[in-house]
Image (cartoon, rainbow, N blue to C red; front, side):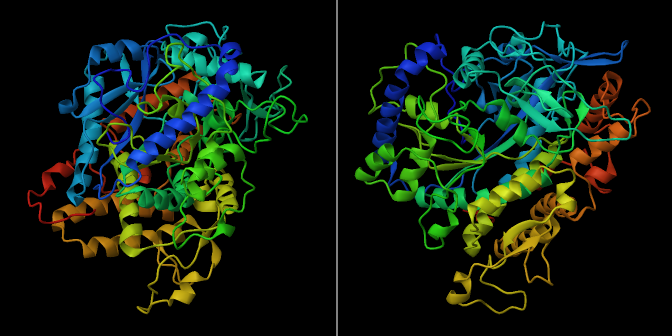
Length: 637
């Protein structure tokens, strides 16, 4: 897809060869950084004037592989990912799918075989392609195996949760709950895990608030890193062992990519709350609905000095966030940007920034790259250290690819037909392809609306962080209010238009997600779906194509309004209404077994859940039947 190059190699971006442990890696950290900056510069100078690329886009879904024991009513995560990847063979774009390994050996990532294009009816291919990916995977499974698109497996880290069973811990994780042998066998993943722990100087610590029911016990631990009364986890596997849904799209040029990077970041908290599907961690109901903070803590390699717990001596910066976090700065310097929007005290390497600016990189992009490079490279391949900086970007990508942020700004790869891209990274996995397609289509269409109507969503970036915190809360989609810009559009609800001076005024208010998505007359806010519908009215498309897109936007509309519930709320209600639930926040093996069986029936269309999917949801519906062959219509670039 747009986000990766097909190489015919099932490892994709993964490199074969021996990796360096942290003791050896830290000796050449500065070398890797210096040459990473040079690689970025050489590549930037080649591609900075690249323009007029059309919209190409794709999605990534991560899948769990599970194994059932129906006699014992048990379900385990199945350590067969590498074996399944070998069965799938070399990349076959014509099959409609590409496959990649993920962090754990119970996960696989699937993407479309080729990117979608710039016609409206390309949106009609998404759901069927996702279904095709599931069928391909299911075709190579045993009868007692299945694919799940949950964000988190409820019993991840509980007892013997894998098949075959593995002893917890080991020299890589040193975990109390997660086995080394659950990590995918490629060196990259175990090296990441070990080097994060060794760089940090101790294991990662993850503490999530437990949902307090009437019989919930106070959880206590021996570990000094564990908070009493919280759900404690201690390994990268608890974060990177979760699944998600992402989308990447190609932009016209670098300026459009920077603009979309900034604007879409504002939507990350809204879409995180709207797609919420993660109420369970390590066998306990939590008091949050999403995964983000767990992954953030799971890969947090900051030392005590970088955390500000000790004076700086061996390290260079006090760093305010994990390397898996929301972004800290807007990068566009277009006419809508104001410097006061970047109101976080940005931590960046001033020497690197000066080097970049001296080579003609604008201040916004220079600070962005210099901010990425406050992090150390975590995975260094022994035979890929000395490279030709004019031809390779491995050292740059080493830093770039391990800054896991809400959105990612992606330069064109060297010697590639791929252009400037933006990756939207916050969406949670959904149970059905219908839901996943709806979220992906909505995000990509939103980028078209931004461009067509010249919308402005800028707000102080610290306030986006506050919105991210709110997005984690239980049932945030209904119960939280989010700060948002009021004057996003030149048009008013009464048909009049704002002046240039009025558009320059920064005016914000607290909105429910329903008001942001569907609009509010009392607050004079148009709403994103009404604006999206206005955009679709302006694009010549066939009525059947429009009706399919409306099905997707109706799902988003109804989730936002509360007419339909989120996946997180559905899972929470399934657990609390289960006959085995003891009102103690514990999600047992039999509850998990029944939940997973139910999810599979919903995925396969054998059952439906009107409160989650709507009364009119039809699992047999095939949107591709409405695709138009007239390429004179529905162009959305």
